[in-house]
Each structure stands twice: as structure tokens, then as C-alpha cells.
Length: 330
Image 1 (cartoon, one colour):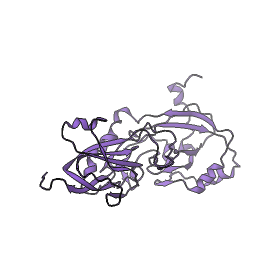
Image 2: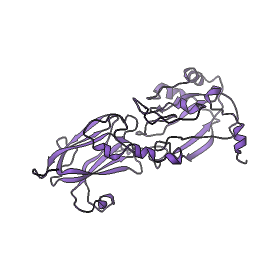
Image 3: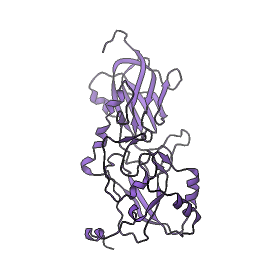
Image 4: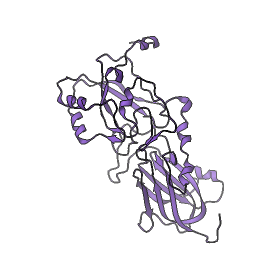
């Protein structure tokens, strides 16, 4: 069948529009933005300085960054019965936090399905943010076992919304903010990276460590004010509630020379200061030599490398210790 032309699409009805009674019946996660915004007939907007207690406000559906196994999905009931000819998945303004891929299935359920009746009765036009599906809701959707689920969009890669804004997200939260002495005021006052487009469709964890098995990581190299011996590491994810890294690791080195070498793999010997550890949302986490989870490097370090897996945001990194040379000055 030939693809629909632009003129043909203009004459079609948006079966998924809330204007025709479409509703979200279930969503695994709605931390940053509720799934009900997927169905709004109006074009999405972006408000640069609008934040909520859960993070940056976005005009669409946005979940927490996945730090557990599985994937995120939702179920919507169409307001009008019809044949689907065209699917429009719009990632407008999701320039570093867009989903890397999407798939869509469709089914025709009987109105006599009890689980469907309960979910429909609870459906609202304006769903709450900062929530995830309850065990009771999962039990209800498990009953929607239609034999007629049909894949209408196979797993398909998605790109960031609008090419001209694709770099805004990374510029908005710079890694240098992670060095601040004070507490971050908002999520914008820290270091946040874009969602990894290379992450697998369904995340899995290592059976022994519990750490997620994900390709790729984000990292930053920081120069310390003094050559010093680190005794305590603080990783602060203040304000990063749904987009904190799953884990992180800190390395240190004693180096003098061309700093470009620090950015090349294998060019400098890095020693592990803090082995890879799981992080938590919106929390100051402390690790120390005394507690046995920070490695002592008696010779001291003057550069550190912070790696986070697979991506996310860190408000502050603080390294407490002693100057290797007591008389040294900044």
C-alpha cells in the first residue's frame, strides 16, 4: 500500500485525540510528565524556566530514567473506533530526554471485560505526575490478554525533537556545576546528560552485583585545587528524582603534563577511588575510607574522573581529604 500523502493525512481524524474521548488507562511511570498529555490536540510547547517538584516540566509523557529492569509502556483507549492509517510520534522539545525507540500494538476488546471497565472508570483527563503504576493496576492490565494484539509499529528508532534544538539539553546543564560548594537550587543547578540512545529496549541487571548491564556511560575529568589524599566522597543527587544515574565510579590520578592526554583512553593510569556503586534519587550519599568503600591512595591525586552509568544528573561531587603538601597554596 502506498504511503498516505500530506493532503490525505490532513483529511484524517486523530483517533487518539482527547478531543474525541481518548483516555490513558494505564502507564508504568509518569514521573516528569503524565501520559495524558500524549493525547492533547494542541501542539506541544516548551517553557524554559518551568520546573515542578519532580523536575523539568515537559509538554508530553516523560518517565523516570530506567534504573530497574524492564521498560516503560502505557495503554490508551481510543475515543473513536477506526482503522489506523498513519501514526505520528512527536518528540518535540525532547532533545536529550527523548525515548530512543517506540513500538505500538493495537487490540479490539469487548466492552464486557471487567478489567477494562474498572480501568475506564478510573481514567481521568488530567493524570497526576510523580507517580508510577500500583501492584493493583498491574494485576488489572494482566487481565487484558486479548488474542488480537497486533503490532502496528514495530520497534522503531526515534530522534530528538527538532534538529535546531538538539544541543540545548546538554548545554543547559554543564558538568562544571557539579563542583559547586553550595547546595543546588534546582535540577538546572548541576550536571545532567542526555538519555543514552544506545540503551537496550529492555534493561537487565547483573545477577551478582545488581548493577544494570548498559552500554556506554558519561564522564567528566576534574582538576583538583591541590594534590591531595581523598578520605571521603560525597555524591549528591539533590533535585534529580527521576533522572539520577543508576550508578557511578570515581577514579583519581597524579598527573603533570598535557591535559589532553587525560581525555584519551589508556593514555593515563587511573586508580579507583570509589568503586562503582548504586545511587539514589534526591539524596546526599557518603562513602569513606573509614567505612571501607573508598580506596586510599597515599601518594595523592590531582585529577579525578567521575563516570556515571548510563546517564542522568548529579548535583554535586565533593571530595574531602588532606593536602599532600601542607604548605601548598591555590
